[in-house]
Length: 270
Image 1 (cartoon, one colour):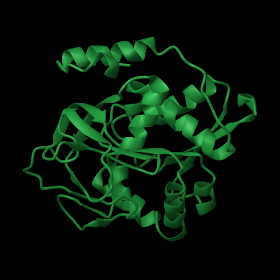
Image 2 (cartoon, helix red, strand yellow):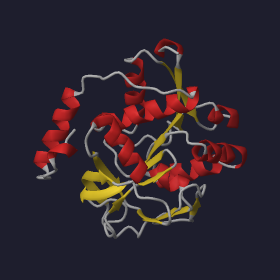
Image 3 (tube, helix red, strand yellow):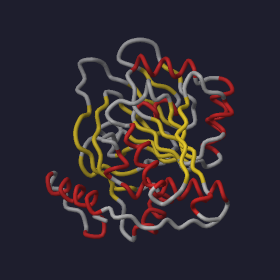
Image 4 (tube, rainbow, N blue to C red):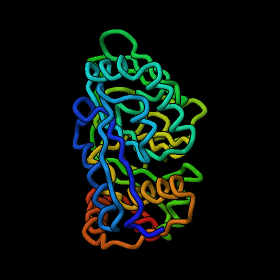
């Protein structure tokens, strides 16, 4: 099937409530990079007006960060059949990128600095706890080495290099992983909790991370992985994406590595 006959539906989780720190850029970069390759793209907001069938129809899921109050509103809405649809999509391999508040949403629970514990969907085996208002936030640039085994292998197969991600973190909560695999190892920054050197989580084809910035424009090869994975799953055929000119993005990554004095192997610079 030719690209012009294929469509990707991007499900954007609660765009009015969960789009802090520029995370809408992740939606834009997936949309543009698919369109540049002549795939048809629909961006479908998944909010209070959406149905479980809307959620079931999407090919990629994007979730951003949120403040505690907004996260409570989302969790009150994402219940019952909607929650079941979300679990089904992730368990069946629908790819997605979930930033900051969204991984907390997918975990077992989030305990804010004030107020009641917010119960999550329990899809990811992790918990997040805000230590309180007197605790310093985790803020700053972030570089991680992707260590989630299958994800790292697939990115390396796409790019020919060992994958490192550049981002920016800004979170008060601390995340502890259970049996779920970490997305990566912190090279620069604090990551999940500033203690164990892990950052994010990876489960099925879901990427969970504290990396804002937004993540995908700084690491466009991850956007391509999401697109390729979504198309392969939807159309059940081998998909090879045509290359794009990512010179500016790669120069930006190199500038950040130099600024942070992060000495990566040449193979990791992409």
